[in-house]
Image 1 (cartoon, rainbow, N blue to C red):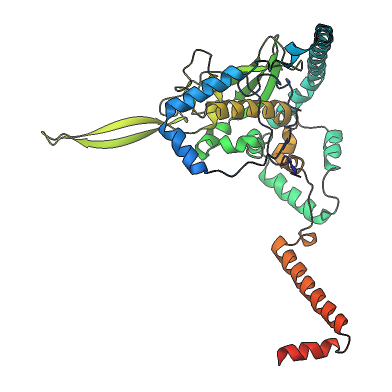
Image 2 (image 1 turned 90 degrees about the vertical axis):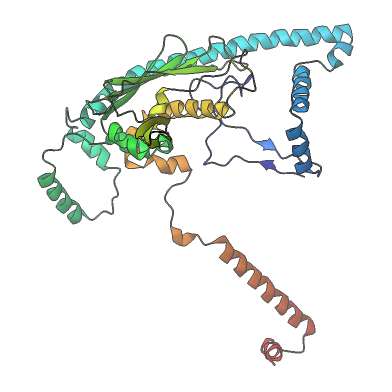
Length: 406
C-alpha cells in the first residue's frame, strides 16, 4: 500500500493565486497548511518517447489541452440518471450548503474585523519600536529587564560587564540600532531577494509597517531616510483581494501594485550598464555603446508581475509568471504576518529556530546515518556468526574465530 507524501517542514506552502487556486482560496492571513497527496503508482512507459512526440507535435498538445479543458465541470450523467425524488433531495442539500457558505463568508469577515481590532492595539507598540530603532527614545528599565530575562542565564557575568564597559566607550555616538531592518530582512525569507548592491540602499530603511485597506487587502509601507539611490521617502506595496469570497468563504488574492521608484542618475539598482566598444568598418573610428540590462534586485518587489487575463494568448504568457506571482504573494504575506510582528526576533535570528521547526540541539546526540548503517550491518553479521556457533554447539566462539584466520 502506497504511503502518503508528507510535506517537508522547511518548505513554505505554495502561495494561492487566482490561477492556481480557482476554488480553495487563501485567507487574508497566511495560516493555511499545504495538503499532502497520496502517491500514485504509474505504469512504466517510455517517457522520452512520449516527450519527443509532444515536442514535435505542438498542435497535438494544443488539441489535447482543449479537449481536456472542455471536460472540466461536465457532468458524468449520474445525477441526471437518479429518480426525480432523489434529485430533489440533492437540490435540497445544495440549498443547505449555500446557507453554510454564507456563514463561512460571515466567519471570514469577523476574523478580518478581529485582526483589525488587535492591529489597532499593536500600533502603539510598533510606533515605540520604531522610535527605539531610530534613536528617538530609549527603552525603559522595565523593558530592558524584561528583555534580558530571555538571555542565556549561563553567560559569564564578568565577561558581560567588561564588554558593556568597552561598548559604552566606543558607542557613545551611535543612535538607536543601525541597520536593524536590513539585518532582520537578511535573516528572513527576503534574504534570497537581497543582493550586495541592494544593501547600501536598505541601510537607510528606518521602518516597515502595514495598514489594512477599506476593502479586503493590505498595504506594506517601507520608510527610508535620505540616501544616494532614490528620492522617495516611502515605498509602498499594496495587495488586493477580490470582492467575492472563495469556495470556503476565504478571501481571494487578486493582484499587487507597487510604487514607482524615483532613482537618482546612475543609481537604479534594478539594472546594470554594460559598455561595449564598437569600431566602424569603413572609417575605423571607435565608439562606446552603453546598454541597460535588467538585473535582479530586492527593489523588483515594488514592480510585481501582472497576472494574465482571460484575453491573453496562452502561448505568449511568460512560463515563469505563475512562480513569480506565488513568490510575490508569499513574500508579502511573510512581511505582514512574520517580519513586522516579530522584527526583533528576526534581527537577533531567534525566529529562525521556530521557522525551521526545531530548537537548538546537541550535536553529540546525533550521528551520521552512514555510520549508523555500518554499525547496524556489523551487528547483524555478528548475530549471524553467533547464531551459527550456537547451532553447532561443539566449538567455542574463540576457536571459530581462529579457524577463520587459518
